[in-house]
Length: 39
Image (cartoon, rainbow, N blue to C red; front, top):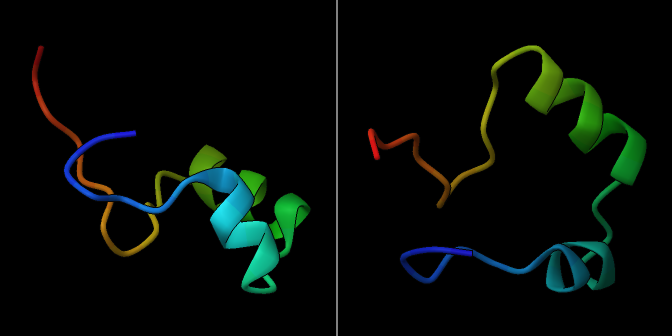
């Protein structure tokens, strides 16, 4: 969790579909509020 991005629990409580979220992440699509960074 970084930069005020919602937690997975908060996303689930807001109605997010966990399987759809996993599919989006595998496809390289990030939810709003989550951005890739170089470590």
